Image (cartoon, rainbow, N blue to C red; front, side, top):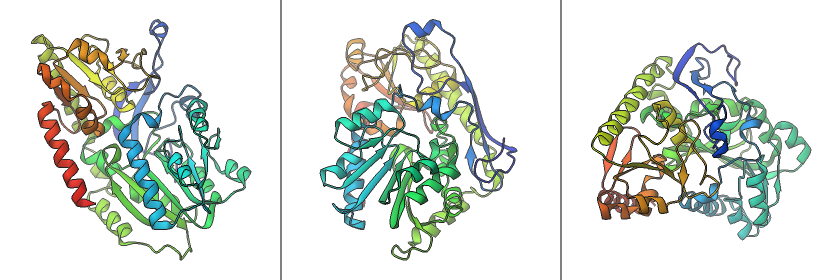
Length: 426
């Protein structure tokens, strides 16, 4: 395997999560009796450009197909995040009725709807037809295709604001993708992209964010280099809380003097280098940390089941499927069911573990002693929603970066404290 950016031969293994089915390949009841395909889940780090990556074991066109099951609009906190972003871009950069805003991987129109409300011209580019259809229902013009340099040429338009949230990591040919963005960007236009931050993955052992949809795991060091290779310059970067810790980058054409480079760029480069992200040896002990989380979780499940406790899970997210498959949790013996708000996942089964996905009423009906919050990055939102489990003595469990058992009362207190801190920071 060679680096997808600089073509260096990859020799340094970052982590091996053995094999699992694609994280969003949910199963119908009939499919439970059919063979399930597992693919390797092993990551390497490039010693030249420090891009952490997985091989394209399953083709992107097979993963992002017309039955793609992730709809962005089912997360209230994500919608709020999108709305705040829209307001920030209008205030800071003057995005208005005369602007052209294009979003790559626009999903169900969760973000562009807020620009459209302000009478801004928008265009979504989304390869999965089912999610794109939802955007069209909202009146958002959407092209159903994979973004590439070839598509950028065919579109022949120029975007004042070009957006890509949680898509850069999903691209197998990252050089072609960034080259296409440069072609689509107006002379004084802005690119913003958000993606999970490799530094957070390493520091907090967020190994469950590793799955076949994510071909790359991105540091600012590597992304800056990839963009510069295509004639794009970073002029700002923000560390944001989404997905357990992400980066929002701001890029422009190299030589564009309209947007000055902020100190945030150099500060984050120094922060990543101080954390060892430019030292190949810093990646060596990640596997042992991952193994410890697995052992702690399995021990918890076994001890509680021996005590006769009932355990359910909340959130049929891709990260949860990576986590359960790596831990070897299969069937309903340890975790009886998983709840998810999306009707597109309900009445199906998690890939690999085959745990049934149900509506939230099942928690109220079965009254489990523990609810494992699999999308730990949404702990505050979920614990607030399910605070009623405290009525029968139920407790929440999170496992990343370490195993914690949390009472609903404590979760509410933590939520209030976090909200106060956020208000102070604003």
